Length: 214
Ligand SMILES: [Zn+2]
Image 1 (cartoon, rainbow, N blue to C red):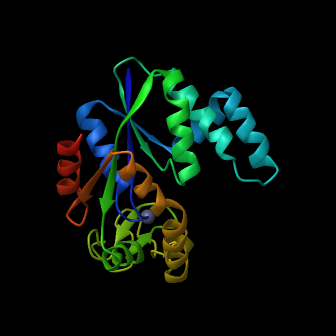
Image 2 (image 1 turned 180 degrees about the vertical axis):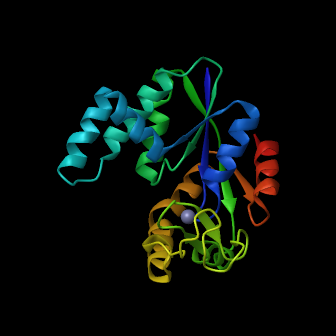
Image 3 (image 1 turned 120 degrees about the horizontal axis):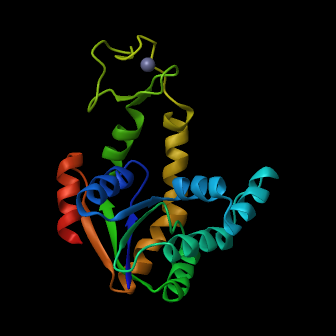
């Protein structure tokens, strides 16, 4: 039997960071939706080819194709493995689909971890991100500032705020999260699988809480 642990939380809650850190420590497999998609495309799996046809026509990859991709991934995972899903499910329909596909892949949903952060903290985290347009290095005005304000440590280029990290985009991302993904929390709560994690601390503190909740 394979175990699935779902990571939930708003953009900026630190799902990816926590999942990656705990996976590296425990040997779990960290799967972000973006990486899974890129991998399926690169390997040309049936679901990858299906996704490619949607993406080439400029359409979003439908839930059904993402579910096939997760089935492929679980089928290729060793028995007894733990899989951290980061970025899926994003809505209740996907959460239901995940329950439906798991048994065929000899997998079960062990728990859903909700990384709780206040809205004020999310806005501060997301709004403080700065990126180097030349080398891609990431900074944060408070938690990871460059040595010289506004300048990349690695290459000396002036840092920029990516479109994704501008206030109006952040507000929109949080709205999308509230309307589509927040109901997924209620879904897992009803299923008795939800564990709430206080994700207001440092990355190391959050990772320790996540590990303890597994
Ligand atoms: Zn740079």
